[in-house]
Length: 337
Image (cartoon, rainbow, N blue to C red; front, side, top):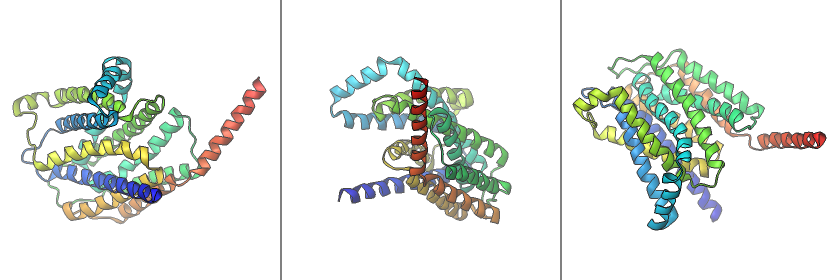
């Protein structure tokens, strides 16, 4: 029974993650392109998402500590009494703030399905960061799948699929540059956060709170620097429709869900989730934005989906590789002794 429950929980986690990922890109794309009379400021949306994440994390920490007294003590110890830790986590929060703002720029200039496929470049980027920052090794199959994924993305970008129902001026090159920046940010911040998480016994929710606190400050600076005058003139919540609120809600839930999924599922399941999100985004883009799927787009997306699956496969190989490495290291240590 225990096994079944855990499988059901994993499937539930991934179903939610897939739906959130696909719905977020499609809904965000919709708010940036279809309803254009009063376009909202994307920097404010990023900031509000950080505030909601902080509130949700505080809720989860309250549940974890079990009482308000313990919660107060935990916050006192980890937040007010450790500025060094806050500084350490301001690094990924700056990087995530840039990444989240780039997502808005990218989806203002690229179709949701094209974005979803291209964004999978975060896999090779994360792989490289893992190799350099966490000293892990990748198997041959993983390297092969990384190159295959890059090939698939190149095909999708070769002749970007056109959307017929979008009336806004778009610049695919700006969109692609924004994704490239977002991908680099995603890879670095994810691995950095994992390193911080694994370097101490501190709770995930405490780490999240530390990160979102600096995130709020950084995104507020972003609002001031990018849209300061216009926000002062039109108001912080200018152009907010129920759809925009929905996008902000998905951004915050998606951020927290990812940290839960990282904890409870493995690479293969995350890969399936990403692949399913690509397919869902394609279907939604065809229906909502009149996306015309070209042969190169279909082939590229297919290659990306297969490479995600292959990348998640080898568990034993990598452990065997690392075990060999450690044996070698031990032998060298003995020799040097």
